[in-house]
Each structure stands twice: as C-alpha cells, then as structure tokens.
Image (cartoon, rainbow, N blue to C red; front, top):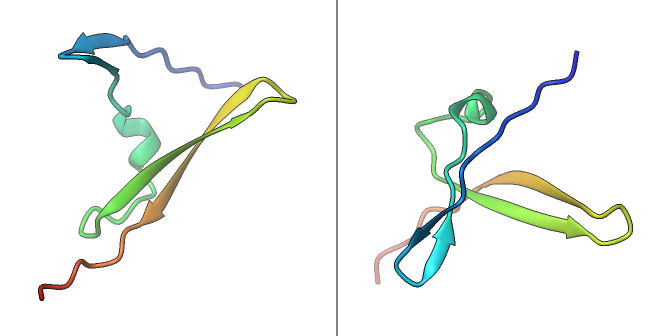
Length: 60
C-alpha cells in the first residue's frame, strides 16, 4: 500500500513555505539537529527529500 501526504503551500512574507509532516520524521533522533535536503531529478521529473544530521556549530 502506497502512502501519500499532501501539504498546503502557503505564502509567508516574500516566500512560499510548507511544513514537513511528522510521519516523515519518525526515524530521526530528535535529540540531534538535522537539515532537510530537497533534490529534483529532471529526468524523472520528481522531487526527493533527504534528512542529514547537522554538525554541531562551534563557538569561536
């Protein structure tokens, strides 16, 4: 069975935004910080979403 999510795209200031559904975040360690990477494959005409752990930002 395929799972499908639909999210509203909304205007916020001078840009458009959407939220990441919590169902997509189940495998992430919530104690760590992550970046969300959106990648477009023009051959397949599809977007892919990837989560990568963010390195701790040092002070100084």
